[in-house]
Length: 219
Image (cartoon, rainbow, N blue to C red; front, side):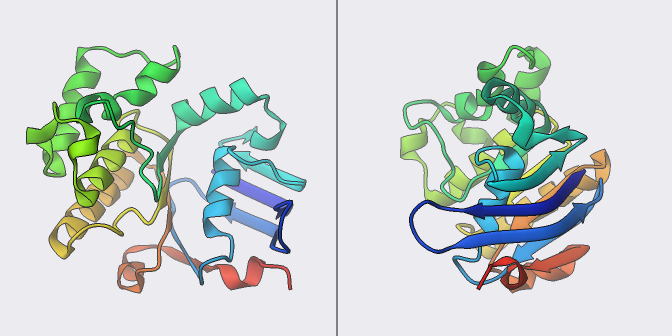
């Protein structure tokens, strides 16, 4: 699902450099990425999703070399194939919960919005405990509710790859387990690949593989 070779990336300001000689993630794998803040975990998610382009090396996702696609091609590929749960949620404040969940279908003609999609969005919202808030604007949600909207939006297009940055970081213990169960049930039922950045080491036993990022940061 993911193949990375000879990757190098650094920001224009600062001395941080991410260097990954070889990293492969198989289809259907569940991977947790751990390590201190500033070691590049979120940066790697951005590179896999095509939000950032490496200065050297290759990033291939589902057979497509992301770094060689044009901007529009990367965007359409990402919307069709990758579900993203951002640490900052990236909700549109003036839109309702339902419209935020449906947002991927508004962004590309390659996804067709129909009644079945609307019903799936409502079902996902019920499963994470926000089914009664579909008409509420995002700006009126708690942090935990916003997190669950982001999870629903990521799952709605039934992506082959899920990239999640601290997907349970704002949830209480009960809701954390509920959201994790939904993510892992989806992965198991669809053969989806799951890559999660987390600082919560209590979650690690649920993953098939754990990657420590300290090894990828250039001295």
